Length: 179
Image (cartoon, rainbow, N blue to C red):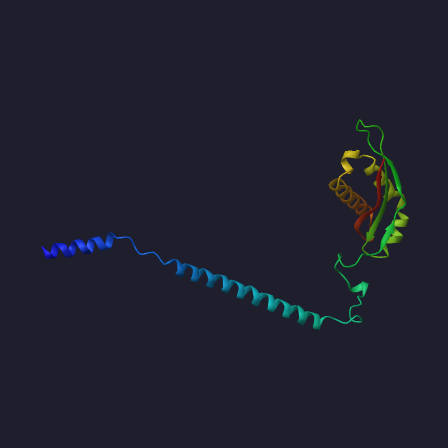
């Protein structure tokens, strides 16, 4: 009988719920996690500020900062030679809101200064391509930012098809008025 009692106690011990961690242990662990996280953030901030100080010490002086434009290849850092076009005044396609006019001034960024002479020689062809393209547009086609970007891309493509000695890199609208 004693053996049966011991077996019941062992079986009851296995079925008994496990003890939960006391609240103070959970709080202690959570606070340690917070402190450790804060220490990591502080360490990262100190090391990044040290890197910035080192970079500032290694920064070139003003004399060393001068850039030779002929050696720069990154298009975002330097604008190349530009070709100014005379303003265009174009009748847009009537889309039921009455006649609309577009007044636009265009600048072309060139790969090289030598391309200016070819553009001057082919100016009538370039202007004809641009006039034909822009007069085929409705106000709704070009009044949004996306419409203007698409028009720039189309001008870029059409003008580059005409050129032999080089290419234009970008098209800029310096004035764009729909009336």
